Amino acid sequence: MLFTSLLILAAVGLAFGFWFWWACATPTSTFFRPVLVRGPQDGKRITLTFDDGPAPTFTPQILDILREHGVPATFFVCGKNVERYPELLRRIVAEGHAVGNHTYSHPYLFFKSRRRMAEEIDRTQSVIENCVGFRPEIFRPPYGSRWFGLVPTLRERGMHLVMWSATGYDWKKDASGITAAALRELEPGAVLLLHDGHETRGESETDRSQTVAALSRIIKDARERGYIFAPLKEFLPAG
Ligand SMILES: [Zn+2]
Image (cartoon, rainbow, N blue to C red; front, side):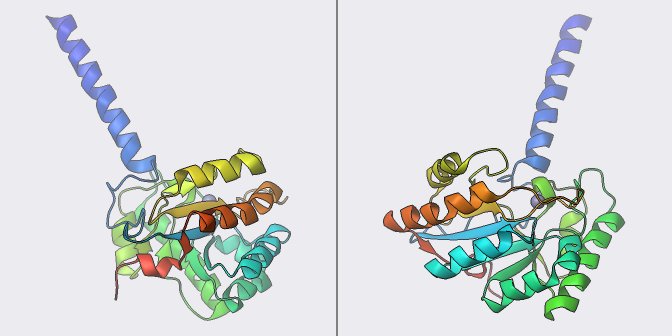
């Protein structure tokens, strides 16, 4: 009897653990809401997002490709990288792309206090404002990690939580793998995640050449399938 009870307790604990992990760490989880995971399913609009920049080698290469194809994108930048490369953020904005907040130092948000999360967000808002004169209204958590208190912190600042519904897994795949994965995950309303920059812990730049190599192909193939690259703001609630 005791054994059975313990077994049931362990099973319930394990199930809760898995659910909790899904809620806090899976990009498409809607446990913390309001959240944008994907846009409207009507039509064939998709949107392109780049995280962790700006970075000196790869952000300009990505901007060149986007300009060549006339594709709008959103760059979720880290405050620390904006301080290092402010001219790159100015170029992102000058070329008509949107900017989002991706924290200052790119920490996991698990177990972080509300104050600590607010510091990361506010410091980055200030760095961005000092650089380009406005404060972003969108936020994406590093590693997709969310925690209690994040949504109210964003709400106080009039900011939207933005996740993603598709990715090329460009932190671990080569160009052909990135292209295949990104195209496989596309669907109407897809928010596609790629990376132009690097986490802020190291000084050396993470190699994003495979993302750069995949990008033109992703854009061309997506358009051949009838998808339209839309600005992220079309996917956000009006007002
Ligand atoms: Zn990131």
